Length: 99
Image: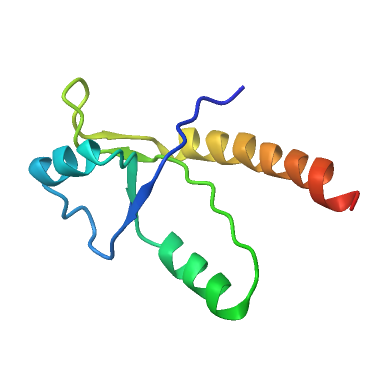
């Protein structure tokens, strides 16, 4: 399987602007990640009346005491995207395509 975390995500339009203190504060609230686009997806779904879902892939770990500033290579990201895409298609087949 693919390792994953399930939890609330903080959406922000700032690009790598989160300080270590910000990350610590968000962690206290159970926030597991920061991303930039999902809020727009869910707002559009709410406004237009359709269900929305989001699967996030972690590409950068900016604030980790064990491994600060970890970035996946293009090849590593491509591998993860292919694996996650396969899981998404499997879920679609199992729950939605069959009706």
